[in-house]
Image 1 (tube, rainbow over the protein chains, first blue to last red):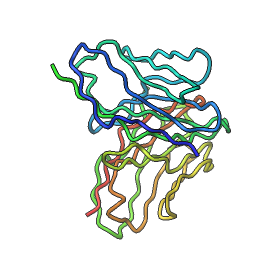
Image 2 (cartoon, each protein chain N blue to C red):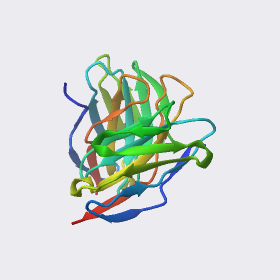
Image 3 (cartoon, rainbow over the protein chains, first blue to last red):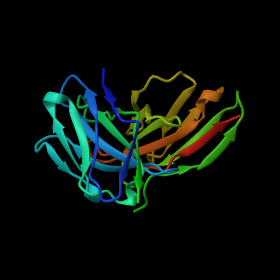
Length: 116
Length: 111
């Protein structure tokens, strides 16, 4: 069965510092992988996605993620965090089996706080 | 183009009541999925509809049902509401494979 773990429930970083959010998944084949961000009271915004090809994926707002098949990981990184990055971050894995089927499994999320 | 729109934004119900949540996908998007997000957790998949047919169902009881209309809008119905149904209900639509666009959700509170 598909599953996603995000080991860090909450992370606090200083503005300007680098950031890495961890994500591990369990899936029988190469999945689709996503990172979403959610600000309080709002829906989910897609930061980046991995379908195939280059394992280093660039996203919006200066984020990037690297797919490591051997470690079943898809960690999110940003070299310099801005105060506006404070939010909840979700890693997610999607099924590949059917072209019209979109079941996506989300991790429990990591809450990011940014201190000035 | 407008994004995914959901209505209402907030809703308060009592136990045992029934509720209907609505979702309008982005124009041209034929797939709509519903998710439940309990406070402090990640979203959980409830349903996916594609071209008005149910294509996927998550691990939710039969009290949850949905449908998709010819204009691709969708409704999520929940009967016999329980306290545990209190959550943010998210709708997502997509046109191409795998890239879902989420609405801001409906916050449902059960008293």
